[in-house]
Length: 115
Length: 112
Image (tube, rainbow over all chains, first blue to last red; front, side, top):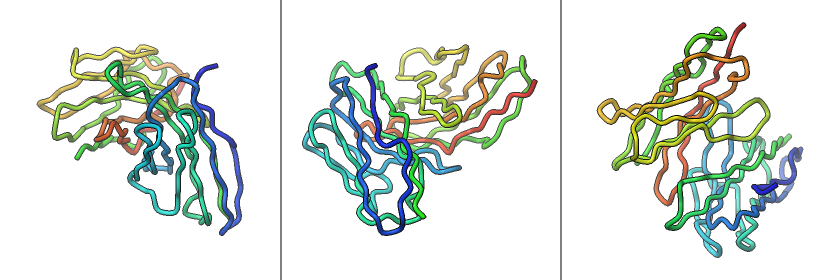
């Protein structure tokens, strides 16, 4: 099925470990986004990529890095995980451009626990 | 800057009664507004969106929302709640560079 695929779905890390969350979309969307969801705070934007080859910081970028590997893939890396990064992470994509109807598609999320 | 405030963190209704989830927005220009729903341990699903067309927006599953510029509100309603409506609902405004800015969420409980 067409959409946004996130891997892994669940992960437990020890403090200080590193990992990369993967996101891929098969809808030929231009823009991709990484959000984190914490109780009582909604979703907050970590990083986004308006188009292939560009990345920009969002609201809460500290402790994260991203790579827009190609048009399909947008990865999120935690270099040294901290308990404060325990969260559910969502990737999203959007078409953009003149034909845009503001349609965003979200992945199913990655639940990350840092102990 | 754009922002949204969801006025209730929890709403509880009985099955078959109306649902009202309240949202106020702040925007320096004509906003694009959305309501998303998230069922337990699931991803986000778009319920409806307002993009400066009709002020009364109809969405999926019988939900609708009315954009009121004078009140800077975009409340979500449904005439009759169903058990399957129990979920968390997010009011969202589109910000600069087409980023989505989320409210804190309202958890809707539906009782038999």
